[in-house]
Length: 356
Image (tube, rainbow, N blue to C red; front, side, top):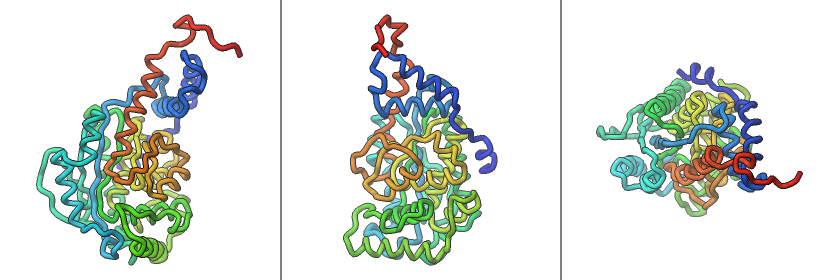
C-alpha cells in the first residue's frame, strides 16, 4: 500500500501553476495585493493540476492518537493516561479541536494507532492500533521498521476513506503525551539541527525538565546512530522507526495519500511538521500538496517549515496540537481559492488595468 501510494504522487503541474499566476494577474485587484493568499491559490492549482483548483471543502480532520515509551524519562509533567482521557474528550465533542472544527464545518475522526490502553468502540473512533505505545526512543528504536510501515499505512487508509467519503481537504491532528520529545528528535535528525535548537517546552515545563528533555533527545540520537535521514526512503523509514511515534508515522501516511489523490493537506503544528519531514523524505513532491496552517510556538516547528520551504498562514503562538492551527487556517485557504472562482477579471468586468 505504501509503495502504491508513493507511485501515485506527482509534482505540482507546471501548466496549472502558470495558468494560476496569469489568472491572478488578470483579476480586478492590484497584482500581488492578496499577498500570501495568492501563493496559496497558485499552490493548490499546481497540486490539483487545474486552474482554478477545486474548492477545498468539505474538510476532514483526523486526530491520530498514540503513547510514547519516552514518557518514563520524565520529559513532561502530564501523566500518560491523559492520552486516553483526551481521546474520550474528542469523541464527546469537548476539546478545542471540536470547537474549531464546528466553526470550520470540518468532520472529526479520531484514530487509535498506538494508545497504551484498550479503547471502547465509539462513533468517529477508528482503530488501527499497531502496539500499546512505542518503546523508549532514548534507549533504542521506538518501533520496528515493520511497525512504522504499518502505522504509515494506517494513515493512508484513513485518508483514503475520508476522501472516498467526500472530503476535499485533509487536516492533520494529533494526541499523545510526550510526543513533542519524539518530534524534536525527528526534526533534529531530518534537518541536521542541534537538539537544543529544536526542542521546546511542549505543554509547559520548567527549566529543569526542559534541560532533561534536551538531554533525552541527545541520548536518543546517540542510541540510534542515525545517518542522513533524507538520503533515501529506507533511511527515512529507519529514522522514523528509531525516534518517531506511531502518530508521526500515521500522519506521514495521511499526508502521502493526500498528495497521491491530489487533495490538499493543511498541516497543523510541530508533530505534523515532523511527520511532513518524513513524508517529504519518502517523496519530495509530497510538499507540493501541503499548506502550513500555522507556526507553532515550538522552535522545532519553525525549523521543520524552513526545511520544507513552507510559509505558515497563522502565527498566534499556539502550542496545543489536535489540529487546532490547521482548522483555523482552513477558512483562509478556502477564501484564497474562492477568489480564483468568483472574482472577475479586468476584461470581464470592464475595468481598466493599471498601465504597465
